[in-house]
Length: 154
Length: 154
DNA sequence: AAAGATTGAGTTGTCAATCTTC
DNA sequence: GAAGATTGACAACTCAATCTTT
Image 1 (cartoon, chains in turn brown, blue, red, green):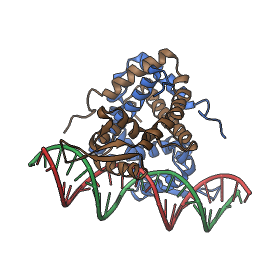
Image 2 (cartoon, rainbow over the protein chains, first blue to last red):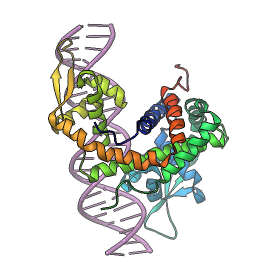
Image 3 (cartoon, rainbow over the protein chains, first blue to last red):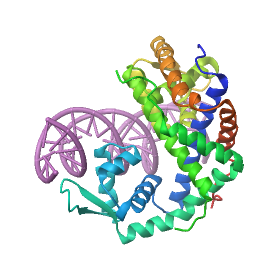
Image 4 (cartoon, protein in one colour):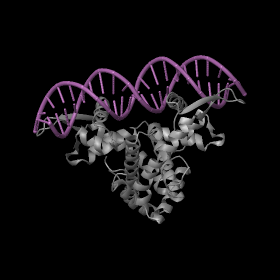
């Protein structure tokens, strides 16, 4: 196998993938043990609660959660069935509906946070030194911004 | 919303999640553009090629890819249908089959690596300074090792 | 009984096509 | 026509139950 990637770079990449899988899996298990919403549902609730006017269109939800529009539709379907969100017709643009939190949705969000936060702390933040946390935040922010595709758009 | 996590810690966590989603999504798109195997399939092929005797049981595959046993079974099913792997009865323990690479599987692995490597370099390694890469590798290795659950096993 | 592998049923996502509004 | 949302058909996984071998 030809190299193509420095040994250090590859090691960092693999550690990155392993860390993600490990932490996400454990937090997800914690949430379930406490009978709270899943991480995906939590992401939806947080996204809505942080949006201007505390409402979000499926399209924006899809962008933020890295989903397709249809995926967002079905996700909202399930959350609506569970009574955590509600679709409300938008005034200015009647093409789509705005998704808002119900009272139960707000409560579910508030209840889930302590467990989620404990997971983030115990499994992630506490394992890092303050310096590492800073370096990681800067580096990951740059990576997420992703200056360009790895391939030019053919 | 009560704090529970330091602002820096939370920022690092969110950047971490965003970076993962962004890079994985882009590399996956690159692989598809070049008509190569998906990242999941690539992981399977690599895992087998790195295993002792270049063979792996579905059980071990499941552990390594963070899958259930049944998930591994179905994944191997598809790879076998595509002609990239083959199930071979094990001699000493006839309960399970060993999964090995076919010639086509080895070739698919070799073909995919340059594109995958380019993605890792362009979207991840090149964005980091050598110092950052080292810090990241150390920190992520510790996170992946995950000293303990965030909750005691009730 | 325990462990590996598999299968049936159900969940959650994607893609392509369609409907509605801009 | 373009964009938002949805739907039908399908893909990939999980859970629980089953079969086989240890």
